[in-house]
Length: 207
Image (cartoon, rainbow, N blue to C red; front, side):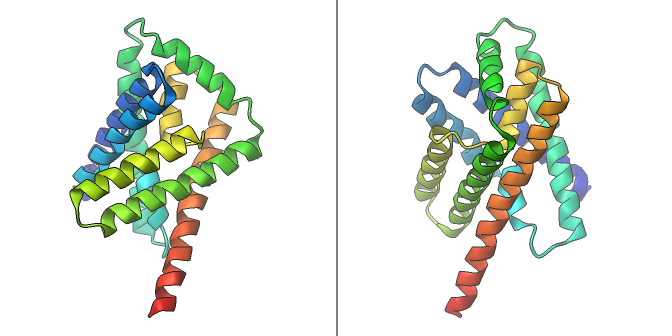
């Protein structure tokens, strides 16, 4: 039941990211899309939903059970993203063409550039999640989430789960797409886990 709950919460999170991706692709300006995209992360964190980039930073110390949670989270996220993308494909929404242009640009980067941008995104996502749990005031939590999301989107950092939605929407199902998604997920993990490790070292130093 617990693992099924993880998948359900992962699907819910995936749907929210899909909707956020739609808003981002449809917004008249990048900054507006970034602000509205933050709504999805805010809901995910307040509701305790399972998003890969909000959970991967806490894989250390290593646990087989937690790794199962991560894989089930990814599965749930993908299902949620596929649902939204599938519904959009039943329309003639302009976001589909915008997604194709965005995907073409993302796949034109060298792999190491995508890795670097993914690491930075993972680091920002860890900061958002960690501060969210540290702060007690809901208003401050919302502000932290909003600014954090705006930072990584305006900077062009690579959020692997959001990118899966863009790839689905653009119908980009190639080996190169798969390899880049794996690179982005690894990068998100490196950034989040690395910053979490440094944070733990700092906390131990204060004891």
